[in-house]
Length: 257
Image 1: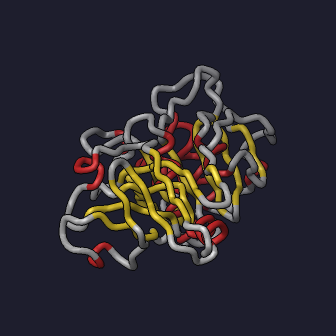
Image 2 (image 1 turned 135 degrees about the vertical axis):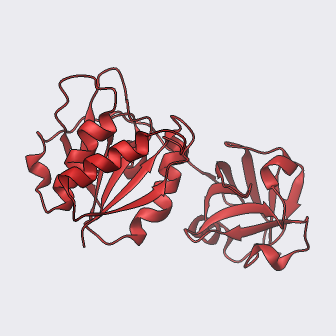
């Protein structure tokens, strides 16, 4: 069955989500629409990218992802549809697709948008998403484009004995998701002992789950996407530690004796 996922910063108190779904159903009544989230912080494309990157590969290839975060986009009013890693994505040209793909989509077209509309997610993105979900050819949606608004992901700082990363997301439970990957720890650490420093706290191991420590204690685990996460067992780490988006996290490795 064709799938469309829907991610937005519309919230749950207004009609905006329903209006987009009505457009999808009108244009593709047989397509299944899966909500990823509509609680992305308003205009926060970094939050939107994190949530989308965390889940889109769990869907079958060919899935169409309608991304309505900061959906008015820029003053230029451009909207794009792209193919990336076997999936389709549609969004305003606000930098979100450049962060998702690191500015390397497999193919990109610019969607026709003659006027700045009050609800482009409903009037531009939804009809295009419905077309793709029903087997339409991406190339028929608009002219091929090689120009998108580009934003850069923050890069890790790596040395022989240290990794410096940052918090890229605070989840619903207050856990601090960092940009430090399991691969980077393996590549620098080579099995050495280490200390993870964040704020005034240190942890010297990465646990299998949050319950590996006593309630109220700090704990580090890997997310299902293999990124380092800092939490407090049964507590809100962000509030209790006073750490938020972009907070620095260091891992120092001990020299081999």
